[in-house]
Every structure is written in C-alpha cells, then in structure tokens.
Image (cartoon, rainbow, N blue to C red; front, side, top):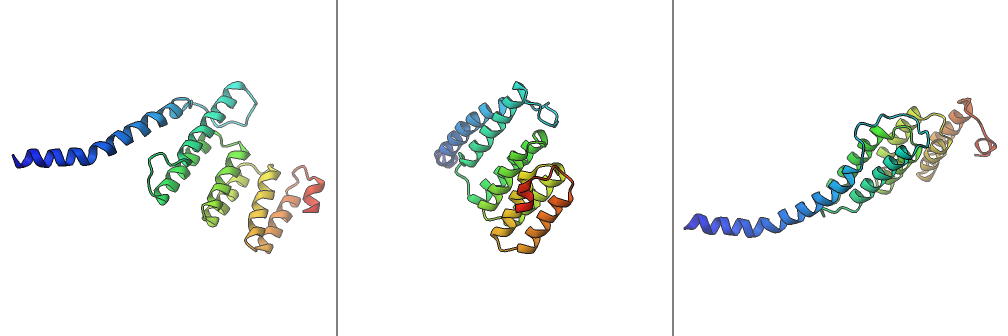
Length: 169
C-alpha cells in the first residue's frame, strides 16, 4: 500500500513537468521540421529554397531565445549557442548569422566568446566588411583601441574591395 502512495505522490509531482515539456517539444518540432537537414553550406544564391531555410533557422533561434522550457539562464544560453552553431553548419556563408551570434554573445555578457565568433566569421568570410566593422566596434566599445586599430589595418591590407568608409574608420 505504501508503494501506491509513493507512486501517486511522484506522479502528481512530475505530471505537470512532463506536460510542460511535451508542449514545448511539440512547439519546437514545428520549427525543426521546417529545416532541410540535407542542405549544403554554400554561398547564398538568393533562391527561394535558401530564403526559406534562412527564415526557418531564424524562427528556431528566436524560439530558443524565448526560453520556452523556463530553464536557468546558463542552460538557456548554452542551448541558444548550440542552436546558432547548428545553424552555422548550414548557413556558414551568411554574414548576418555570424553577426547575430556574436552580438547575442556580447549582449549575454560573454565578450570573449563574441570575439572568438567574430574571428571565426572573418576566417569564413574575409570579404565581409560588415563583420570587420562590427568586430572593430566591439573592441572599441570595451576600450581596446589597439586591437581595433589592427582590425582596421587588416581590413585595409586585405585587398578586399576597400571603400572610403574603411579609410574613414
């Protein structure tokens, strides 16, 4: 008889958690099902399929940022970072995904992680001036003038289509 009481107690304790997790799973599955997991990471061509995948990933990332499971901040941040990393496996050549990931890390208080993401992004997309400027701005915002200056010098020495803005900066 004692086991029955224990089982009822455990059931009443865990049933709401189970129901909540099931609702979040079903909602997440809607976003995950929109993603083409066989897509290759190629430079964007502007096709409808690519745009659809881009939007599907953006929706999934926004969903994760909403912390639907109501987990602690550290676990939620790890989950969001994991989702961004998964996204980059497919949208590797999209500078705005890299930018969003790095700025999200910076806003989350992880400046070092944001710097590493910008460094990875510039290896992946060295011709993206936006990423160069954003990285330099991040360094400037934390008072690191010399690293920011080196970033601008790298941009100028890169031989990439140098604009007047690069010289002004």
